[in-house]
Image (cartoon, rainbow, N blue to C red; front, side, top):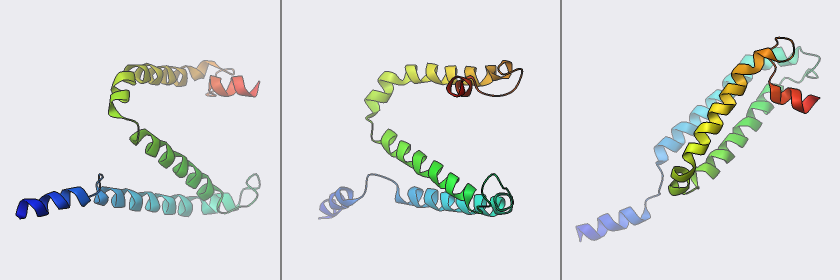
Length: 121
């Protein structure tokens, strides 16, 4: 009887750590509050932002939604696929870091990314 109860609890339990999920969501919420409270005066006094006090909050919220979507997609990809293609991602990551480091030679010594230069020209 005890083994039946233990098996039933295992079947009904979620496949993720609920406490970790809640702590993560609370920290993300605190981060949004911190971004808003730290940037409200700057955004409110900037003419280029249209004196919109919530400009940085909206921007950070968009980044948060995009990152949560990317994380959800990444967590649903099977582990075998990540193991098979992991080396490719390592080299792509090194390439991105190399591009980021090499940006000081573009645009007359400025720190503008070459990807931005290609898109803007």
